[in-house]
Length: 163
Image (tube, rainbow, N blue to C red; front, side, top):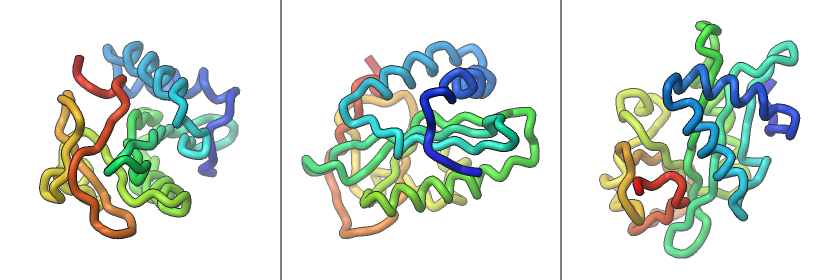
């Protein structure tokens, strides 16, 4: 079952993040807390996959401004039970993307390797003339889900930017 995050999921989510990110787990858990404390945070943009009261995956999406309007979201972090080898990552993320689209967002941003995300419809953000307001630690990728094309600067939350 895929559903919105609940308050009592936080300890299981922290465990998923720690297992997924290893040595960087504590930093990613702290970053997740910072993203949850933002004014734009919505539990409707934070998803978990649950089987038998145990979480299999977690995806947090944070609204970002494009041309001054919150037209997009950024996926960060994404974590999963690394011991559940048969987990349908693509199915989980596609379900999340459908929910994001139904909430009126046009773009989904992610940071990472295009090889890992191209099967989900991601492309390099600069190929659509989109860039972020400051430096990132990874390559900016984007998936357009609906609406007219937007170009220009995307305003990411400071917690996701390189200091």
